[in-house]
Structure formats: structure tokens, C-alpha cells
Length: 309
Image (cartoon, rainbow, N blue to C red; front, side):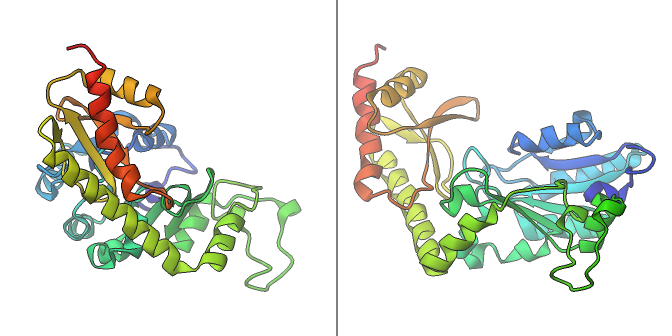
């Protein structure tokens, strides 16, 4: 949609275009840029600050350099909840840049945007985005295969995706019965993915989800405090949402990760933070307890004791 809004390509093919995102952007964005025909060499990875958030000054400088070189900026991808540390890009400042430069602003909120239920004051600037993606199978506790795109431009959606024939012609003028989702999205046919989410919200209510997300956020802070209190461990990144990156100060953290997961009591993933291998915990489960959280520290220390120097 951003491409068709700023540099239409559906009829004549892709004619360049530049996309901007932070160095911490999720792998799906370079993949999307490649599949759109824009090309990964036209994705600018903008520098981040000491909290792993996109720097608006570096963004503005990158756009100015591309314009000076005769290139055509199209869109900015801001991230709410980076995959490594859960950092939140400064949306108001990025939106200002997008407005001045007439660029599409997309928010990749696949992981973190649903924190708005528990932290509305921190994420009220989401309203500035042209489009926003979220994964209900992350922080709305749904099974896999439940994602969502929100946007404010149905006219651009139809311009981008509409291409039909007589055999799918609409006979009803009713705004509900006559709505053809395939004229505003990639899919011609699709299954009812929304049913599981709708049913969960109807049964539990929004407050249950808000409270569960707030608990996940608290659990991340609890783990961060436990890590900082332990002399053998160190925190590697600020805890913006529910992801916690840490390391053992003296032992091989790759070996520790393998041993922790082999022990089977807690399961951690890994990340790279400032060129250091990190042990990463991310809380997106409504059944997690304080005991589960604190067990992470004891399991890492126990695993470190089983690893040779």
C-alpha cells in the first residue's frame, strides 16, 4: 500500500523507492522489501540510540541523502517492541519526519503494540501511523496463524489490491453483505482466523487480557531485578516491554543456553546485543508465575556450574 500510494508500480512495474527502518528491524521487513521488488539495497537501516530506538536525526539525514542523490523515499517502518530487546521507537518524532517528508508510516507492532492495553499513555501516538501490524498469536495469547493489519486508507487498499473479474462480481449493495475483502488484501480465499480471537475476547473480556499483559510486563521487570542483583549475571539491554536479555559474566553463554534448555525446566532463546551473545527471556504467557520467573536465574546459574570454563 505504501508503494502504490507513493510510487505506483502495479501497472508498469517497480521504479525504485527507498524504505527506512531501524538497525533492530525484524527480519520480515527486509524480506518484504525484496518480495515487493524494491530490493534490499533500497532498505536503509537507521542507527539506534543507547536504548536501541531509531534515532530521528539519523532518519532525517538518511532521507535527505537519498533525495540529494535523486532517489525516491517511500515509507518509514517504526517498531514497537523490537525482537531482541523490546525497544519502542520514538513514534511522535518519527511521525513528524514522515509528515514533513510525505512518507507512509508503518508501525511493526507484531510483538509489542498490544502493550497499549496495559500502557496506553506510552503508546497513544500509534494513532499517527498509516498502517500497523500486530500478531494476536503473541500477546493476545492465541494459537499460531492469527495476525492483523490495521490501516486508515481503504481507498489505497482498493487501489493496491483490487483486480477482479465477472465471476466474482458483487450483486449486493449492502455495505456488509457487499464487502469483498479480496479487493483490499492479498488473499482471494481465506479461512476464519478471526473466530478464535473474537471468541476469546467475548468470553474473557478485554480486562483479562489487559491484566495478563500487565503481569507479563511485571515479570520482565522482576527478572531484570533478579539478574542485576546476582553478581554472576549482567543485564545487556534496557527492559522496555517483556523481553529480558542477559548473560553470565564469566562462562560460555552459548553452552549455558544449550544446557539450560536441555535441563528442561525453563526455556530461553538467544540474541546478540552489542556483539555479545545474550540469553533472552520473553514473557507472553498468561500462566507464568513469579516462581517461574525466578527459576530462570537459578537454572542459568545451575547450568553455568555444569559448563567448563
